[in-house]
Image 1 (cartoon, each protein chain N blue to C red):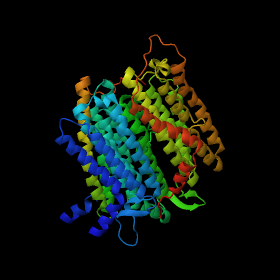
Image 2 (cartoon, chains in turn purple, green; image 1 turned 90 degrees about the vertical axis):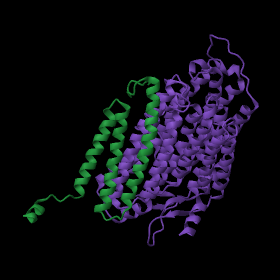
Image 3 (spheres, rainbow over the protein chains, first blue to last red; image 1 turned 180 degrees about the horizontal axis):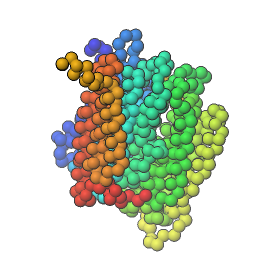
Image 4 (tube, helix red, strand yellow; image 1 turned 90 degrees about the horizontal axis):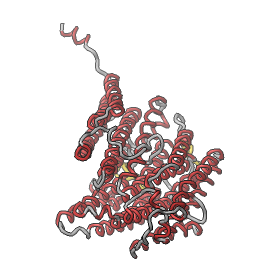
Length: 501
Length: 111
């Protein structure tokens, strides 16, 4: 019994390290009451250690924390290469966010509360790490809540302006309602099958015919909870408000890592629970609920709404919020293909998306530190105040649009290839048209930065060495992966396997 | 005499529990959508969570699924308590800043 438990714990070393780091941060926060500048470094060391063990875990394919008796060995967590890949993505994003928060003047103003900030941040990371490997509906619900509870607080953590508090209230109300709805869906699935383990549910659905109405109803309810996390239409209402109101570092974290964890959860849920069999990398799902049509409708709605609403936003954080909704729509198409090729497209897209989106948010944060505003109007002539920031933001925005020679192009290319190979030409055309629409609102920022006249004289910005290094860390891969992308794709290709029955 | 009363007594089965839980769920959802006061919205959320709890326990009792359902209900109760604590802290923060807790009046972030 104890041996089993220890063997299982050795499989989740990254999670254990993150938990220990969280406790250490809380302790240091209490002991070193005067000087809190050490805390971010403890966090970074913890995440690096966790990252090291996550990389070691690639290639492991097993179930951990086995609950069922008899000859079935399914557990609470499923550890596989797919999960390791998303763990690595989340941990990389977390390292970047810790440095991001350290540079942000909003977070620097917290002073004695900064220990709590990092402790809550680690709560979020822990929730995400469990989300990517949860293979039991209750584990899935608990990990989503672990992530949510920390992020509700962090969304309003700075309390500098009215909008911070408002953002956390809105996030709380939408989040609590949608996770409650998801729990109700889980309870119906439990009633239909008598179990909450995804693989056992899959066995039951294969052998017993269940009431189609209750079955579809519960799936839609569960999708409400996951759709909230990935901000898919019609569960996206919180996204613009929370992204605009929250501190920029938290906005950036929500838009990359929390979304990545939500996607990993959705992919695992769909594939483990509804897979009938696999042939040549394409998945054949169980009858009863048409996932493909459902996902295509949701994703077309999501990207169209995201792109068109972004057209008339005046606040750049709000615009990036709608743009992140649109990106969620593209990535949902990768799942709608229901094949390994589509999954590869999602994984490549996420790796590129965290780099370019964090880069864009970082520069927005640097500019907000200096001019104290996030209005696109105030960006007039900023390209001349600091040519380096201007050019870097240009490259990130071009990458978000998906134009060559940036990494964003490669991500979109793999996605559209997967769509065309699956004979979903019509959907691919809609996605390409959407990208064209998105060009307008990204280029609009460039117009303000380089062409529009400014009433007031803009002063030159001073950029510190740290900031230049951080931008280059994100800028170089954005350009490099646009040209030399095979290592990235090969890495994703080697992590495709999702553990199944 | 007692035998007759026992025969007339309603047999409480799974359907009764499910009816109660669906009514609770609908009331909770209705509360979340229509109530203006943030505290009332959170009470709606609690109703939704408790309706799921009733489902878990009822399915576990009448479906002979072992005691897993009861355990899940316990997890959910603990989680609901944590969520209520955080929610009330946020609502208190809102009250300090805006001097009211009406969800539709707190609308500074533009649409």
